[in-house]
Structure formats: structure tokens, C-alpha cells
Amino acid sequence: MKRFAQTIKLRPEHREEYLKLHSAVWPGVEAALIRANIRNYSIYLHGDVLFAYYEYHGEDFDADIAELEADPVTQEWWTHTDPCQEPFPDRGDSRQWTNLPEIWHLSEPGEQPTAD
Image 1 (cartoon, rainbow, N blue to C red):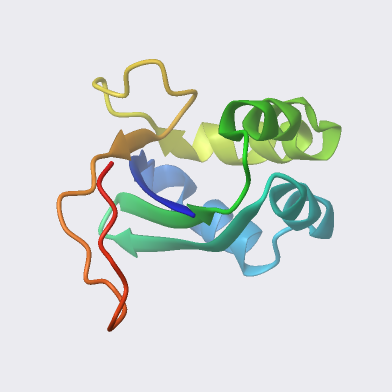
Image 2 (spheres, one colour):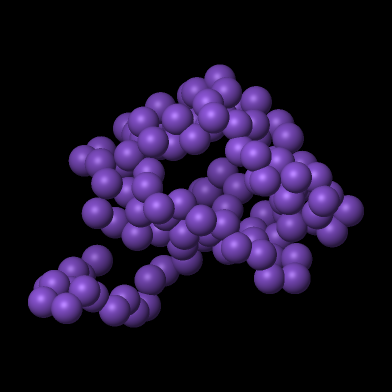
């Protein structure tokens, strides 16, 4: 399992629309995320900054993400959510969100920490 954290700005003029969309995420979007081996996905909001956390439980991240990005329901979902977001300029080759490096993690008792 690999943990991911990401951030992006929320456009203030689209705040209510974005919150409404995420109050009832489309079942097809959730199904595509599950097929891509993404678990424990959460999005948090602080002011106009979104923070996301998820865990990847698969064997081939690139292939699973490529399948997710090719999913027609997910692509349609993004036509609604992308205009609500303002990517940070330093997002690198990320599609929208900026990936954040993990600098520390409290492991479960008895669990060996993993080095990334």
C-alpha cells in the first residue's frame, strides 16, 4: 500500500458547485476509483485550498491510473470538477492536483516503517 497526498486551489466563485458535487459523488466515479485500487480517499477543505489523501492498494499504479483516466464516467465528472479548481503552478506533470511528498508517518504499533 502506498499513501498519496495532493493539493489544489478551489476557485471561490465555484465553491458551492464543487461542494454540491462532492456531497453526492457519482457512483460510477466511485466504482472507477475502486477498480483503480484506490482506497480510503478523502478530500478536505481549508479556505480555498483542497487537500486530498488516498491509499493505493494495487500492483501497477501507472496502469491503474491510465485505466481510471480513460474511464468515460470519470472524464465526464472532470468536466464538472476541473473548472472549479485552480492548479498550483508547481504541479509538475500532474494532470490537475499537486502531489505532496510524505515526510513522516506514524506506523501502527509493531509495523515496520517503509522507506519510499
